[in-house]
Length: 437
Image 1 (cartoon, rainbow, N blue to C red):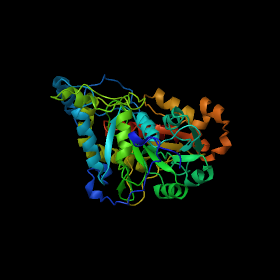
Image 2: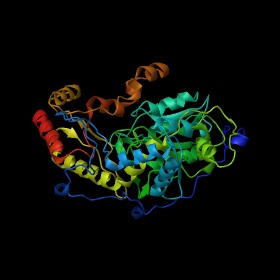
Image 3: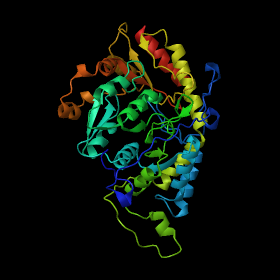
């Protein structure tokens, strides 16, 4: 196995990464255990008093749900005299890890992109290595591989879930393959049993891109607590919880997380908060590696702490909105997203639908007409094999990705967020019915 960058004092030694024993997490441990919400019992009002937004008739694709609690937490942080990475960030890391359970720890960073970069760096990914990623994802999943001088290998997705296809992973493995980055698309877990089995068979590392997947469950276990090497979550503005910008690297591997901690802040051996708040002289530090500037501020973490407390309510609202879409759109010429299997839990970060062959409009025209009627949508995603950089660097052809290619032409994402009222959703449903019937 190629050399690892862990631990710091023995950077040239191979990394021992034993697969942790399987830990079953009872669903009752999670504050966001599967919630059954009748369609008729949904709450129209926002969960907490939102910070005012400009009045508008346009219904956006997504909005964060921020209230007085977040504002008060930020103000408290501002008045504390410490606003960068410090005690509040540590509290957020601990609270997030406690929520997931199963013995994991977390390191807060300023984006999921940073988290993916740091996790792969900590695993020793570098020039000459290949990392398998799905083509149906945001470019960050692949670009972090290039940051390290390695090569992402794009593969197709499953036609039903739009998650990475295990058979496509198996076909792409070569002697240079070092890692797999599965993406839990839209909030639905990938087939992790199959992926982890492939990783064990070929001695590969697994870093889960869980940007969409909080709080997703896979066979009763929280994403973030499976047997992968690391899992990376996103707290971007449109995610299920937000810190404005931010992310979290989660793992049971203490050496990996220590490397992430050091590399997120310039490769400095001593924590800045500890140095500046120490009552003893603590000016001395050492730069042990050429690190990055990827730390989360306490201001962002203060928002995150409050958002985490609301995740049960946030999830219930998203589940209710998804259930109503499934009920009211089922007669339209749309292919609706699947829910999780028994024992699983969909986070419903996104609600992506696909036009069928019977639809009277093409996807692009439907998006235009919805916008004209004041309804925002998006497309998740333009597959990476269609993006100029990836297409040209690797000479990618659409026929290599039949499922992603076919889905892309029919795909659009409908508004779904916790501040969306019943009336907002009824407007979306009525407009789609008008345009597609």
